[in-house]
Image 1 (cartoon, one colour):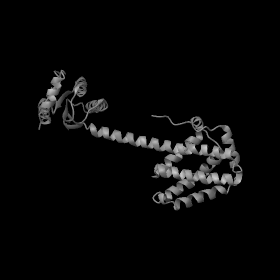
Image 2 (cartoon, helix red, strand yellow; image 1 turned 120 degrees about the vertical axis):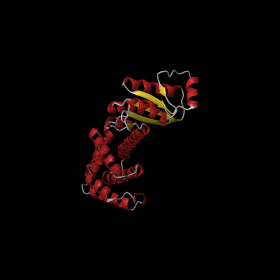
Image 3 (cartoon, one colour; image 1 turned 60 degrees about the vertical axis):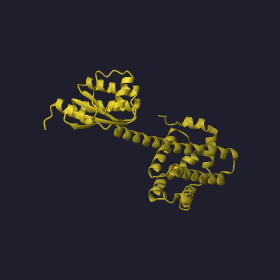
Image 4 (tube, helix red, strand yellow; image 1 turned 30 degrees about the vertical axis):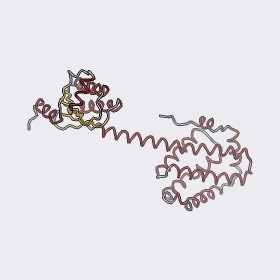
Length: 288
């Protein structure tokens, strides 16, 4: 996963040097304290009258801005770009996105706030080209941090979804005392095979099952790689004292495995899940 950007990296990325920050700080000192409240009132008016903010303009959002407006204002006019600044704005970004703002809405909100602040700075400190360029570069850092927060949140959401899908794709179930079942459906690649084996071995260790039925009737393609994965799963189960039965071996699948020349002497197979379950129940001596 990509590391969080540092303040030094932001300075290099947007060509910000200390003279730029000094220009912003000097301009900020000329702005009267009461202007802070005026800027945020203007921001709220802009939000109320902006059609795109209809669904986002909520009491929670306004309260969130009110709670942090002094820090936001100070950061915009102080010309400070250090690690604490980056951490604060990562926190702001996460909080506002947590209120349901889309990335576009959040970027628009921050850009509007920056523009209103810049107008006030120009009003009191003058329209100096070097200062305006410095502020524009400084403002880009805030926008980039918003994007970083959104990227991290999206990546986390994707990882959570992938974890959920992996759990659904490896549904090991204890269907009887000492008997586990895992029906495989779809395609099996190296990543999924690894997940399946981990789920299988974890469940075997948890239940101390004596039989594990791996049903492949729903597997789309059985090639050399898939067959080798099945052999590895069977051997791994046997090392833990569990017999592995592979069920759902159809005629085409059997022919494919034979044509590939893969040895399956150590693997127990059946044509159907029912047959495998019957054998497992019989050999386990399950009483009805």
